[in-house]
Length: 240
Image (cartoon, rainbow, N blue to C red; front, side, top):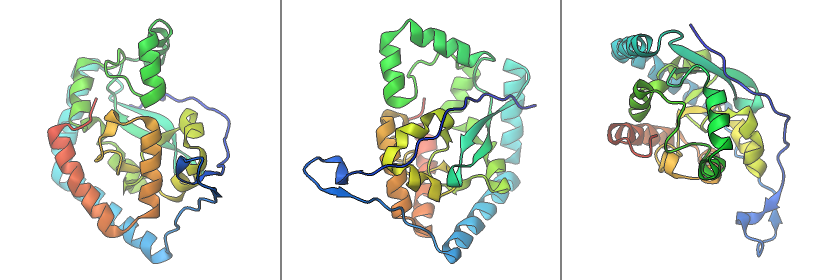
């Protein structure tokens, strides 16, 4: 039912950097904001209520997407991949399959013969024209329907409705000083990155937005991001 697609890389510890990324500023110690027990309980309650509401209301859509993937691409309908969550712990991250079975080999071969695509990948960790994605996969990605299985991750407690985007193990080193911020929260189905331009933004900006979210968290901020996510999904803003 599920396909595994993962790669392991060595850990990279958080580090200190000049304040604001500007060499004219003195070096500062960046400490992530930590939620209180009451705040964590409130956030978790919102997650559970939101995930259960999704399956109660949109369960038929989930089944239709699964059927479309099965008919167009065959089994498996889902795939899973190791991602890093709260505290840097690994968890199984679920999505509807949108790529070819041999996606990693296709990507490696494509990047090896296309310098412009390599530059785009290094900057965004995404490709505008990704050779791995099938036509049906492209459609469900455009509407973010491939993300629906992550509501299972929310119910399991691996993820939150709102938080930093789940990080691949090979992307850990890209977080640098902000890794401690990432580890403070469960990763989210949506977040500041998704409602601020998403794939139009370089990966460094995604890291910055993740840290900003952690340091400015409130339950009201989560609700605002969820509302903005609806608009981003409807318009397809920043999706690839």
